[in-house]
Length: 300
Image (tube, rainbow, N blue to C red; front, side, top):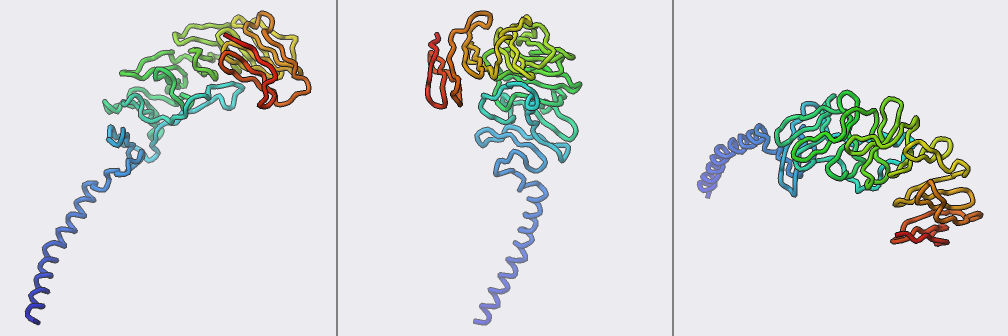
């Protein structure tokens, strides 16, 4: 029995002598070859790289050059201004654009990176898309010289609006396809072909439609595109745009216009009422006190 135990012990020692160094060597080899750096949890930021996945499949990996390295975040510089900026989209943080582009901040530099070609294609300072998807892969971009323009990212980078402006913004409606811009001290509206549509204004526009500009300074001021002022004799407490209609609130009534140059289509006495609001419903605009409809305007 003792002889058998001695043989077993010798056999066990031989196995340890053979396999323990192999196990240690395998562990060291895995560490040296980054075996454990495969990002099995599919993290966006992992081991000094930015990893881009699609349905669990790794598409690209950007290797950072600095510790301070991340996807560039969209700014909304209108938050501190008197502007009814765009905020109706589905929130989507900037990640992989069109399955090949990314906005990256690496150290002191920011740029648009083509992951397919593994190269930077444009240095930038800031990006603005209001944390949503703008139609046609459009992005409002501040270039490295501090000027704003609009680009489109499809198969290649396309300049839509040249980088000539100190500010570019969208109002709270995407269907207009027009932008407010600032050049020097002047504000005006342009279309996506960089054509100027309005006279220049010396104040930032709070909101606008296809034919009306609203300024919100100490009071509300409403203009057409040629700087003609309207409703000067009305003490306006608020204005909003619903579809192609202009809703004017005063302390005692609500007026609805389709053409600011003409008479109102609807006037509702709201004196003594509280929590007055207006909402669009199919084929009509409801004037409400709280949740209760007190009047409406049928529209086409």
